[in-house]
Structure formats: C-alpha cells, structure tokens
Image (cartoon, rainbow, N blue to C red; front, side):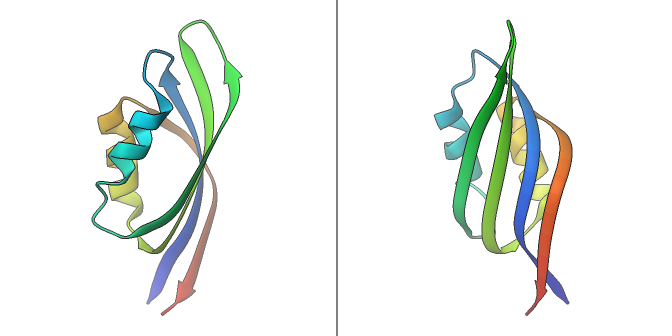
Length: 86
C-alpha cells in the first residue's frame, strides 16, 4: 500500500485568520506531520493565498483537507502529492 509522504496545496484563507493558527490546527492531525512550510504568495483585501507543503510518514489527505476547512481555509488546488510504498 502506498503512503502519502508529501502534499503541496494552494489554500485561500480570510486575512483576519492568523497563519500561526493554521499550524496549531494542523498539529491536531492524527497522522504524524513532520514538517509544514507555509508561503504567502498573494494578499487581497479580504483573502490571502498560501502555498502549503506538508510532509509526514503517512498523511491522511482527507484529514488534512478537513483540518484546513475547520480553520476557515479552502483548498483551491492540489499541486503535488508524493507517495511511497511502506
């Protein structure tokens, strides 16, 4: 079975939500997340666009999407997924 090791996502969030809060939400994942990189690449009046790269041992994509939604963000695009046997 393949295990998801890395995700690259485009996420849009309201500007009033702090990026540090998203890190706290992602830390609640049941699957172990080893690393999160968040880059802001577009800021508009009410929204901010983020590139989020998440790395872990066996990521649950549905859980990651649900946590981002819980935070108030919307996944606009899945840019990359890396999976390995193991």
